[in-house]
Length: 297
Image (cartoon, rainbow, N blue to C red; front, side, top):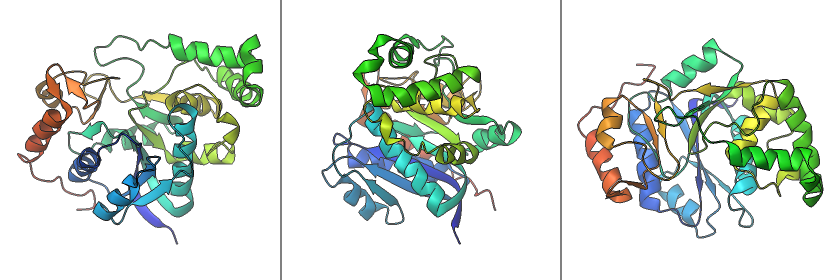
């Protein structure tokens, strides 16, 4: 019988990851969550970082790469392996993917995702979408070009095997209302179990034919979700929990807490603040609060 968890948390760890910061990201989730959980580290460091994290979090699972996979489609393949591992070994309600520079800063970060997936079962991925933190629509020009180049132009011949499978999924996604290049931002997002089961049935967890695509994992998963008939969901506008930007914090720590945001990206910097200072600020903020009660309590 499979173990049952409320949330599966998947964290990819690369060669530049700092164990202290990864631990802080995990600690931020475990402090604020109200659900039972399982942590899965995706170790592509080839520096033993997964083993170090296993020593800190002995209950965590480690998915290791045999050779360096890097980002882009390589990260898609590694995450897809982890998602498949979660389906094979556990029953769960939702899956949360967190980059190592994401952080949980508010109580019950999974609450709005659970509500969304329950009220709209056809929503498959949700997070920072479709706009930036300031309300400006994400610029999807670059991923749109990557998809169109591979699926609809003569550049198809540069990666024929990958692009055959890309075109197949692209055409299905278009029929389901896919806006070419759209995606839920990849620094942190929730995925429904229903979507993951559909992707597994479609043999997309993983599809190794995608390994040469020059697309980000968030672009690939979002396209596959639309191809499978699922929607992309907003968990970022207004009082919703996500506040994500690409290269740094989207606002000051004080503003994010005041607005009730719960999941942020990226902790790398905010104006003159560097990552250690940002993490220390949020760790001190955690210290001002009691750990939220578990959902079952």
